[in-house]
Image (tube, rainbow, N blue to C red; front, top):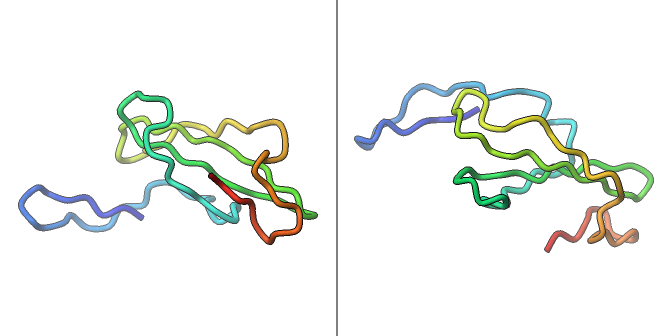
Length: 89
């Protein structure tokens, strides 16, 4: 859900901005990683002690603020296989 500010100190009603995020163990806002002016996300999923990451690039559309995920085709290089979740730097 997103709550958009109206610019006058009040907020518009909550708006659903996509679904399916519960498939991930962690979502991390990483700022504007690709320098296009829009905030991006890293999503982490994993099983059997291995974490896999996807990058969702922001697009500026408040109704669907992220493009499709780009799966990084390898386990997270920042994973500690003994930890319950990856160590993201």
